[in-house]
Figure (cartoon, helix red, strand yellow):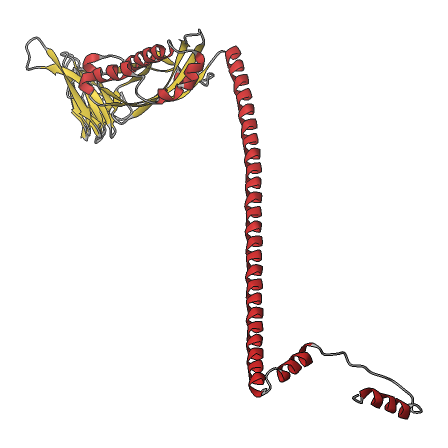
Amino acid sequence: MSSAVMGNTISAGEAAAIFYGNGEVEVVEGPRRVRTLGSVRQLAKVVASESEYLIVKSGDGSTEVRAGPASAFCHPVNHISLTSHPAVTIGDNELIVVYCKDHSEQGGGVKRRLIRGPGLHIPSSVSEWIHEFSWTGPATNSDDINAPARKVPHAVKKTKLILIPGKMYFDVESVRTKDNAVITVKLMIFYRLSDVEVMLDNTNDPMADIINSVSADIIEWCAPKEFAQFLQETDRLNTMQPYAQLQSTAKKIGYNIDKVVFRGYTAPTTLQRMHDGAIEKRTALALASETEHQEQGLADFKLQREAERAAQQQALELQRLEHELVLTQKRNDAEQQQRRAECTVELERLRAIKGLDREGETAMAQYLVAKDCQLPPVVQCGTMMSGSSNQQGLGSLLKPK
């Protein structure tokens, strides 16, 4: 007897099964007090909240699904099991695929339903099940830094489809170029699930189809190219032009490829070392060429500035000479004008003298002689004793004969 049944008293919210000697079983729910000679056993109570549901398996083989909130006692005779299960939560931009029996068809057909979130899904019957996807996904080897870009089959198992755009890292390994260089091309693929029905009808593993088609595109694109040409044209891998098979395959399985990004490549150590050496040499030559170009440009700039400075000095010197010539010309013009004015005055004076001279040329001749033939002054020094004799001598000299 359970401890919950004390003196044949069944508490509220509990139930007990009474087993009689004739084999009959009676289920009694509390609160109640019973008097019986049979054995009494407390029944287990199973409760389901709003986000849960109950599955009741009966002894006759039938199964019932009860959506929560609900509760029930497990009947010792009528029930085989009574269990509680959580409802399937569907987030925003998520979708589940549910299969159930189609009772409208003869022979027990199965129909498919797509349930989009957000919401809670509780099955309507136990014959209903949710589709589980098993897709190719990233390797789980945590020791390898390139594990997310390496894909293995059945790595992703899920029941919910994501409807928002996603991305996938993938390395196309062992790609051989025309000159037998083996490289690994690293890509990032941006995709979007556009038609769930088409995907369910045409593929069991869309990620594997995408990986196989993009591998075929990369191999086909690299095969006719040598390694050096591959390096020169890697920018084309960031466009959709090389991925014809990828786009065709994605369309057939209900996906859209939005973009493919080239993340780089890896090559064998020997080839990579040679390529790195070539890059170093090219970089050194490019730097030397750029340095020389800058030095030549600086020299040209200095020469140009010197030529401009010399031209400016020549222009200033020419302006100075022209200014001096203008000043000299103006000075000469002023002097000529002054001489011309003086000549005019002199000519007027001569005309006046000529007008005053009755005899004609005597006064004019005396004037010209007095003007042009001026003698320097003569200064004589003598003593006071010889003053009279000197005055007599000077008087004799000045006396006209």
